[in-house]
Image (cartoon, rainbow, N blue to C red; front, side, top):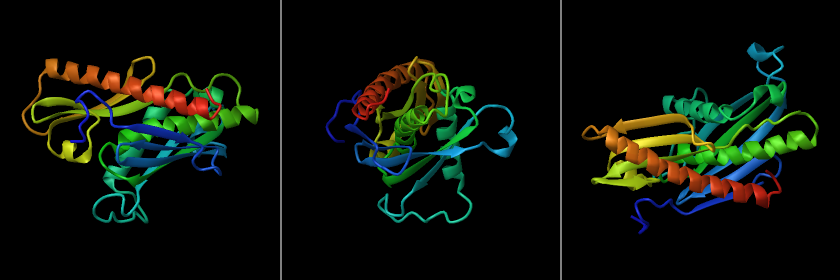
Length: 238
């Protein structure tokens, strides 16, 4: 809808250090989806992890009330089902590339707050959260609170889909709303999959079509990781 090619990412910009009080942070803008990701380092781990000599990474996710065309209700107490599902996805995605032993008994809490939502908030959150996490790990290294290599790889995520018969990368909201197939892809820098979330909203899709969508997503993730690298280099990180 914005004139880009079907295999082209929306315009991406990642600004590291966006929240200067946090150990790590980034503002990620993918088209009109904007998410602030912050990483907070806490000494210690949850009770069920204590004494194991390993750390923990977890995530929380929320949407600001007017991040969409209509006001989103604040979740003042228990998070809703969609919110819980997304924050668990973000946490799983980050833990997949962290050496918990090297992290030591430290917890990194990632907060992803959606400022503007135009499709792909969960995938943008994962991509931006990695930059915030990498900044927090660098802070831990500078403070000499970790030994060894904490980050085993990097991780990013993107959506792909079939819209009016065409395979398309990085769906905006209006494209996602018309999609016959909707697929979220989370991948590591080495090309392995962390998670796939796919649904046929209309007719079922074939294995051949799935393979083409996965390849399209792989290209998109590579482009996002290039943006992650640029952001971290600009901040003096890895």
